[in-house]
Amino acid sequence: MKGFGRVIAWSISLLLIAIGLLWPVLFSFAPKAGAPSDPVVITNYRADFVVDRDGRMDATEIITGDFPGSRHGIFRYWDVANQNNSHVRQIPQITEISMDDRPVPYQMLWESGERFRVAKIGDPSRLLDYGTHVFRIRYTIDGVLDPGSTGVNRTFASSTGDQSAPSAFFWNVIAPAWNNQIDRADITITLPGGVPGAQCSIGYGVGRACDRLTVAGDTVQLSATGLAPRTPVTVRAAVDVPTPARAELPWSYRWDRVLGRSVPTALWLLGLTATAGLGAFLWWRTTVEPSPGFPLQYAPPKGLGPVQCEYIRTEKVPSDGLTATLFYLADRGLVSLNQVDKKNWTIRATGEPGAWADVDAVSVAVGSLLSLNRPGTEFDADGTVSSGRKLTTAKDLMAETVKKWAFDEGLMVKRRSELWLRFANFVALALAVCGFVRWLFPITLWGLPFAVFFLLSAGAWSSGVGSRRSPAGRELWSQIGGFYRMLSTDSAESRFDFAARKDLYTAYIPFAVAGGVAALWARKYQTATGQVPPDPYWYHSSSGTSWHSASGGGGASFDSFESALSSSIGAYSASQSSSSSSGGGGGFSGGGGGGGGGGGGGSW
Image (cartoon, rainbow, N blue to C red; front, side):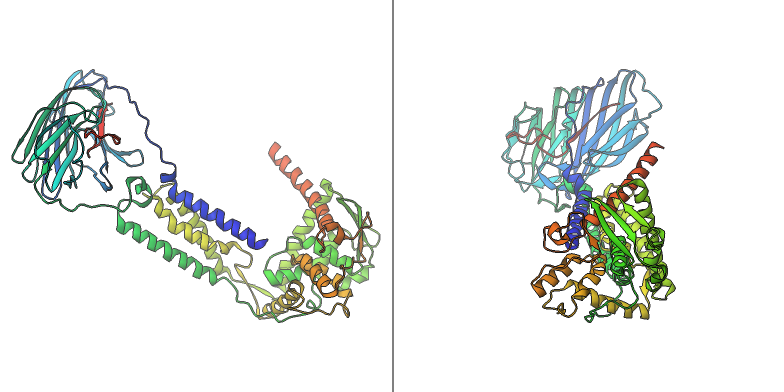
């Protein structure tokens, strides 16, 4: 079961890491369509595009608009993804923005998962005067020349010349998502080589023909009038130059928020992830105490109770330690266990005060707290709040006592330097969360190294980190581990002569319960002898049935007694809780809207 629980924990952890890393892809949403038409009318839109032989475009847009007097300025945004090549990013670099031939404040933003680069132009504390205002936007974009085959099969409303050439300029010279009516647009495109021919469409698909499409040498000119809001003007020009190399990424833009826009950075972060994982594992290994070897032992170390043995073996207090302690006291004749009903047990003190002198400190502490060290006294584990409170206190005292005993006896020593790994693990978790939500970090991949470090160093929170067994403690650990091995392994692997030591089966039950191997111990007895394991003499069932048959599994089960304890403790915990609570353009055979240069604009 422990192994299965570990698999489940790892699976959940890996799933959460995968979600944290990939959520921008898994939960990406398209922006809402249908933006309202803008009150500003663009009376004239003039754009000059100059492309050099390296594929860099220097663009100048001069936008003349009639403003109603209640606007601050305009905004212009660019789609950095290229519809024809998902591996290309075309990010504009602003070189100049002015209004009415004067500098104007502007702010650069990212929108829709950093797919759109936005220039918000204007002073937010000042409204523009009613009337005409002229905005000039100048920017550069790299990699605007496509291979000559790009868009060659598209149909355009107007065409001139031969469309075959090594390269092509396929661009929305009027971006598809301007929210404004544009009365007139004049476009000039200067390309780095001869232009055998050009094509143009207004609108999506085939659209309508552009006005006065002309080609002269390396220059294409055209105009368009009466453009309704969100109407693209798309040009495809053949260019007689070799297609220049341009930066491409192995992934599409949808992965940019995960992997970024730099292959070296992504590879560096993956390498950092591997390094962080290895470093975390090796650091954690320094906190793991090497095993001393566990030669078979057929008896527990003399004078130790089940909780002491399990604490030395695992460096943690066993979850069933209180049950094991009470069974241990019962086996030594100090108490008797009597079942009243399914979830109600009475524990009666039966030993003389002097008999407690030979019992370990943990068992004495539990017996004293429950007032079982005086003959004739009783304690009812009956599911009430009062019994639950007492049992909870007994469990806390048991844990405190066994730890104090181990350190006072020099069996355990502090190793505080190991606790730095817990601090590093906590910091890694915080940074992983920051990386995955992209707070302080640009991409979610930044969260992966920290998440892997956290996962592989999570063992820092296990019992035993921050302490070590002394030489005497390690010797005792070896003996207890050998005894545990005898209790839990197959009889063929570690033979035990039950015929000669039949009475020791019940005597070792408390140790098996503390170690979580009571069923294995019972199965070993049944395998070796061919008989059902005997009931302890101190087990008094109200139904008169054997606990083995009651368990239904043929192995020892103390579920009824443990259930009584759990029920009482649960009632107390519930009472405490209640007390505290009351206080794009794709998909067309036509060329219109199909090129690069997506985006748009409007006023604000």
